[in-house]
Image (cartoon, rainbow, N blue to C red; front, side):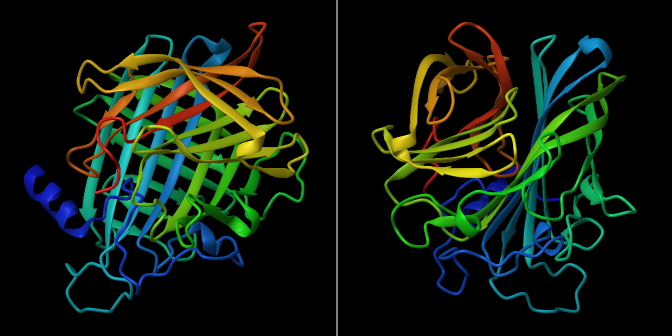
Length: 379
């Protein structure tokens, strides 16, 4: 296997880190420029021709009687090495680079641990199906169950002493709308086109699977915890999504007790101010409303500074969204920062959060991602 230095050199050469949303600008790669005609389960699989793609799962899980509370993240990234796959006889020939991150937030004990993976494409070792959500990277995977109605999530790291083995439904059709408690497939933008700036092509194709009932086990330090809860999956693929003057983003995804789902996406400029702001509010009946800057007020109200990287991240946000009461989200563990020198080579914050009303009422929970606080995501 390559050394960490050669991995970083490879990523820099390819400009291929999927968290670096300004992917290579080669014109032969496809771009997200208009609404897409979707077909499932095929669109749960990989999308050749686009430079970057990810399968991004987060969730809150609890043991019986809520004695233990965990957050988890499992993410697979695909970065294309060529826009047009060509069959080659060598089993070592690769069209894609695969990367993955996994993390466990032990909210009860206030600890956080994470791990990473990187490998060139090889069937049975690192690959993604073009037909369904079957993605594998070494011993980590998200694979359909035998009936195709659910997916099984598996990741383990012996050095960090954790593993997860979870199962969750796989919705195959867009919400139309579903019953309030059912899993939802929501397009994040009309036709799934999600702009990241005013420039054409600075966009992704983006949908989310929300309210996914999740069961299974989390193992920490050889102790197995049977858990249940809810997961959120984001699926995006693109070739270029950020403008040159943009440095990073803040992403929030919430399951609210009211039955609403909320996704907010703020992109920051070089002055660390809001350059682009959008989102989606999903009603309890499963109907999405696409939000613009005029519908959203989003402001940090507290910060946390990483002892490891000295980066300062917002740790609480005041949020006002048209159609919802004003509320605040707060990180449930201060330190949920990932450093990934041996895969994407990006330092970012990905953590479990709670949502509280101004009166202190529990309004929901979800995940917060913040990038570009140690250095700009763009290169």
